[in-house]
Length: 453
Image 1 (tube, rainbow, N blue to C red):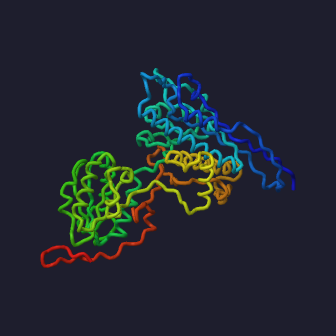
Image 2: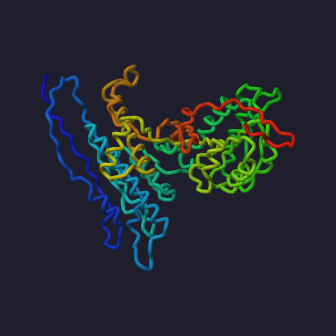
Image 3: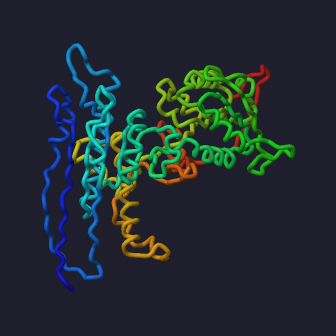
């Protein structure tokens, strides 16, 4: 037994070119930085076995966020709605990063976060250089496509892992193995929907509503799963699925009303996103106008964000959509993590705070495991997965991560999708919703009208 003096250094944020401009007025950002604790040194004495000594480890993070600190705001030149929105997103993301840093620090690890401005000046030049990226383990951002495309090479040369916390064009991932996109890739929720449709609706009337446009590739992927061959079998090997295809457009549902079968449960599958909002509006109108036919809808994840989709439609169709993640309020560890954010900001974490927090925590866990594996245990050891005690490390709260290298020699995308179903005036994980009762063929009275049970 020997005495080890463990030094835990509180995290420090280095704000670069965010508040140093006299003509910039960003109260929320200033308030955020004023709340950041100063650099302190905590010393504790523990009695442990020498074999249990912890290897010194430091996690360095650089975050490039759109504060628009170079924008000169005057009465004649007020900030646009986009600038205000991006500033709000930047502050939310920064709060999520601070939240993650606090959880990592309290777990006994030193983490340093450097904040950089992602918007360049009027000449297109950033107010930071590659020297600011030296020593970074990960770089998070930028969040906008133009600054992102300009930052890819400097970040790659720094050797840091590049974490993307906003939607990204898949083409940027080609040839960039150092990149990871935290937002789940839409191409990976196709199988989730297909599996559930096959397992739950093999005897129902399945109608695939195709809109074309930007979703053409996903629609082709889904169609190939169900495509009937000459034997009447689809790719799932089932001959009992009734599957029909309706070719609509961004503004029309085509002949969908003629495909709805009064004497069957109708399952409408549509992968149309918010870009085809007019078609989704028409789908809602068709379903609501035919209130005597049982219709269930499987839709794109954007369905949850479209404001004109009303609750009555979601409830009646038992709408099921892919979900990028949700907070498990029944988990004590998750509740404890949320409590840390509430103590800092007196509110629950919004979407971008959750996303930035989960991206940083996931990167920290992977980096720590890799560091311990490379320094303590050979790569081919069967015990390499147990070099770090994962249950005692902070974990993600909302966005689960399942990394897949989508392109050869390309970056990684997140394939961790789940399904959510609207039931009893709220969204619930689909696997927790009770199975549908057997479909009862409707009866008609002597006047040919539907007899409600």
